[in-house]
Image (cartoon, rainbow, N blue to C red; front, side, top):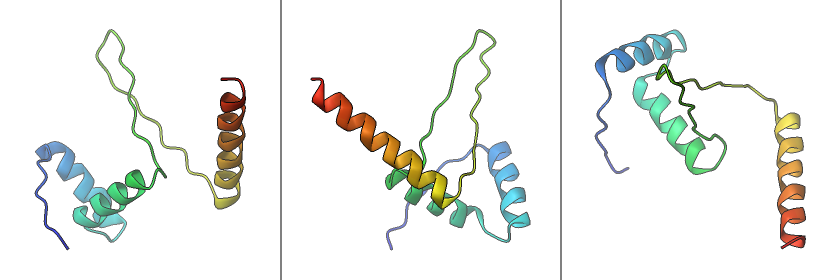
Length: 85
């Protein structure tokens, strides 16, 4: 396994460590899980900008059946876009 060093703001790291500890995981495990899921396209990362400079992201948990349905809809949409080009 290759070793990579990440710089994480102390406040964010402390909050993540607290949450990870409640879930009986380390911050390293959380980072690996997130990076793997991101690389596999299972999650996407986005933010919105407003005049107050607040960022908002929302996490919506879905089960396998809903994820399969969403994937099918995405495939149909991509196919439809390709047909109309």
